[in-house]
Length: 127
Picture 1 (spheres, rainbow, N blue to C red):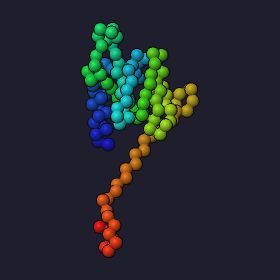
Picture 2: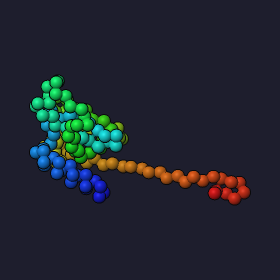
Picture 3: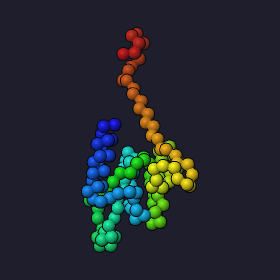
Picture 4: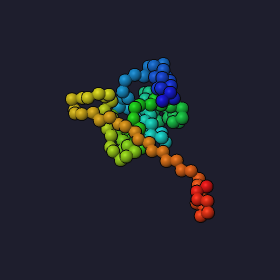
């Protein structure tokens, strides 16, 4: 939990220094990490020319709330993704109830199974 709060604080400070606030724009580039974190990059107008392409590792990516297996977006600003449980999600940019209907909260469940390295011995049992 402490690391998550530190990451959120660091991300917020970086966004503030770069003048990035509010929900991502329609031009935003969306991606997921291998752990399912949602990342967004806001391209600037000068970078949209084909001659000015930038490698992904040099782009500024900010994290948005949620965890998805994959995410897709289009030029109209529609962003949707598939969660780890197969549920489809649509990003609206809002954090509370809207006039369009009920908002559903996304929750993550992680199951960790720990197995000990035991062996059955007919004379002494498990060792």
